[in-house]
Length: 64
Image (cartoon, rainbow, N blue to C red; front, side, top):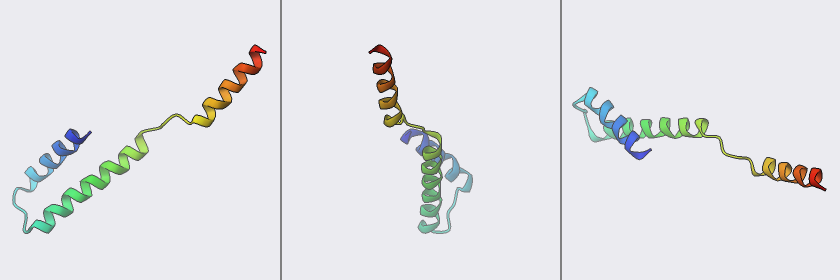
């Protein structure tokens, strides 16, 4: 994941080539990091442990 972010930063900074100041470079990197973070939050779905507990309870009821 970090390598992908570094590759994207490298690609975007290559397009700009010359930044007017250090702050503009930091803004670009920060914007890419925020975008990556938001995409990661939306894209990854984790297992809801409550659903797993309910499923196990149902299996135990059926077995009894």
